Image (cartoon, rainbow over all chains, first blue to last red; front, top):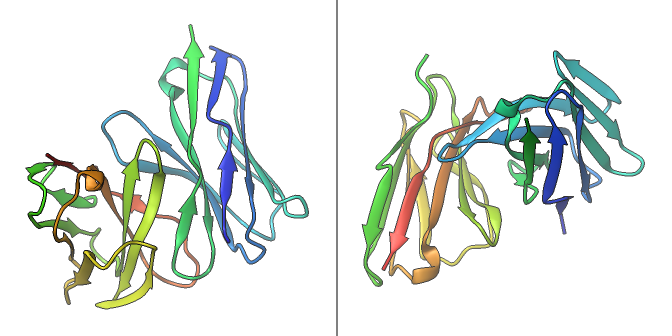
Length: 110
Length: 114
């Protein structure tokens, strides 16, 4: 069945780059997303990439998609303490449903 | 423009009771999706509605139901509550068009079943 997997924790120093990785299983994925969740809040859409793209850049965020390996990554440049949150990878499977990974908790050390 | 509004924010119910949660999507959005978020299971898809029609449903028992009204507002209902239903219930809206550019989430309703 459809699945999205991501590592659970990542710790980086302030000012470094963070790279959060994700793998998915669905071959018919159309859109893939990255969301951010801060404590006590819902999820916030950070960026998305269409499945026929390899890369998308949006200010400090860079998304890389390797469709052959079904691998998606999110790079955050110049990571700040305010970037500490849980980051979710998500896959629009085309069936009016988006499935989410378990989330990667990013710790940013000052 | 107003975001996605979920009410109530917090709810405490007793086992066996039923509960109704409400979601008002962003104006102009016709698709509403519901998710259950728990520490152990993460985000689990419940159902998606578009123009009052359920287009997809997740693997939840029949105790979980939903509906959407003509103004796109949506409700979900859980009957005969169990302790395991304690979770954060998130509503998300989108335009619902073929090109799905992502959801806008509400802040959620935290349901505690005691």
